[in-house]
Length: 153
Image 1 (cartoon, helix red, strand yellow):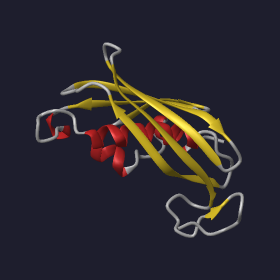
Image 2 (spheres, helix red, strand yellow; image 1 turned 120 degrees about the vertical axis):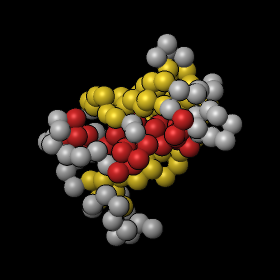
Image 3 (cartoon, helix red, strand yellow; image 1 turned 30 degrees about the horizontal axis):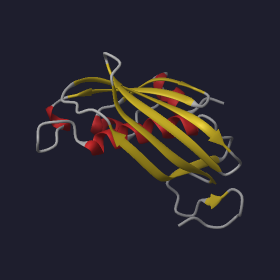
Image 4 (spheres, helix red, strand yellow; image 1 turned 180 degrees about the vertical axis):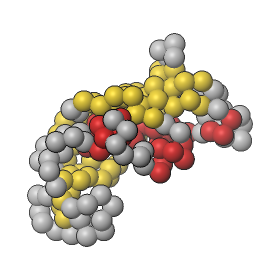
């Protein structure tokens, strides 16, 4: 079964609205891993003239989420239930590469990590997240938790 990310890469689906808004693109996806890129410019700056931390949060959340989604079975979706990020180096403009990976995945909970580097390989940010596997459609408020059968929310 082809993932949503693979369908986007193949040009069969449009990128999600958040990807268009921020400007990140999927470079590659394989089971439990993803690579995204973002060309950073002045539209991404905070009031001090550097890359806004929220943009890095969105980029790493997407990289980790795409990696996690690539491990899901038919009829499963997920939600990020916790995200932590460390901003390690300021960045102003240029190309950033985010690599997301699934570190551990159980029946209902998974742990993911992402690193963001500039073109020279300098580490800009490192993030981690906890994901919860759900049944149902993405974004559905009535999605059902896989292990308990309880309603989310």
